[in-house]
Length: 610
Image (tube, rainbow, N blue to C red; front, side, top):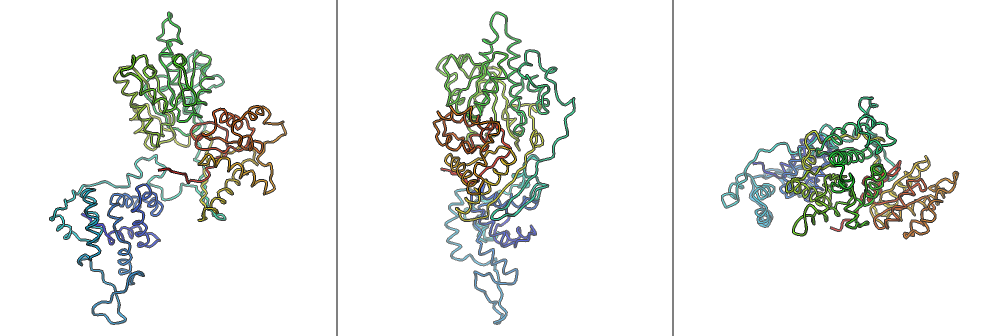
């Protein structure tokens, strides 16, 4: 087996043919290997790049992380200096036995007996390595510079022998699918990206992807043709479905298959969910008898829409209530903000819930308390999971439990429950589709080119090191972007990472404009009258006094610490154009539709209590 030591690591780093010295790369790799896996991978990507050889080396280094971390950086510098003909700066020059005063050289004896320091370190780390398994133990021995003969002696003394297992290229762990953001063919920034250097910051600008050609008439399905007469009022004002909805129409409205739709924000996924609800309504409508009202039968075959946030749940309730009102369908919200009585829950046809709330409901279904068919969860016939890519986040365990319980209910009660997943673009969408039980023809993936409004991305990195200077530069950059968009007549959303920061950012933008002689630059125009006039009474009754303070200057606030009424007021102010800048937290980051032309994510540092 390969001995991982200073010489091995230097040889691997030299194979990259980098302009940076191999010794410098090797010492940086050792430092990265002493951190957690995620930090190590990020550091290696930044250090080595994204070439094919670099990715292969990344995988090998991650596989042998324990051994790489145990390599002494001083040994790396000593070997590099010896092979380069100069002594390392931190080690004294050792003269050759036959050399004179001017013929000093460094001799590296790889077969020498381990020093006392090495033996002491070996005894300390060997016990830990044996507890982690034979691979880690042998890697640590190799990292300390012992050759195969010494390892064989240690094996004879009781160290288990490693099983050599042929492994494929390790860089597949980084780039498993062609849809990943960084593909194997890329060696740096995406094509067309430009980099600029400013005063105290660096900026990378990524242009939007090439737009798709205009759709042909055959690609778009007309509503009057594909939908039955009873369903057309739900799409009033719409002549044709868009490109995405037309592609998934047969699966969404013409079948009962489980399905997963991965598409960018704004591509029309909510209307796909509406089509699946209408498919359920049509199925119940056809099976209902004339003796019992259709809506009473539909109340026993509920559709459940799982939205990740309460703000998004409110928006879905408003949209579905408006669209399904011609059919008399009742849409209710069941979240931490809204509690339903048993009568209201029984009468509702569509329930919009948060994952945690539906998790509680599904825990109580069946069991020893009451009839399983009488529970709310057992009457669910359609489960729509929005933003299913949150499976990878902290709340993903809740979504996983909800889907697993639904699948178990289908198997135990032999009832038919359709699962529909909606998500942003995913690299492993096939795995998520398998998790939801979708057939191959029920998984749909649409790339960023399907975004209706092209997305231009700009990344600004502040080069200042002092926290105060960094904060001032972040505020300055956010002010420049926001003012530029407002001067062009657009609205801006500024995302921050704490509730307190929303108010501080709004005040900071207002005060900076006043200092620069642009007082009132963010305030809405009064040419067409007072835009705040319809909201004066609501602002007077607002509990969040800070909102009433900054709204006159053209700012609004939104975070989870505000009451439901104040959050709704803030959204309506921004949607109506009464304010130009909305300072908010991640509460609005998933799916809430607000007319922002520019979005600023201010800072990437967040507080982690763990």
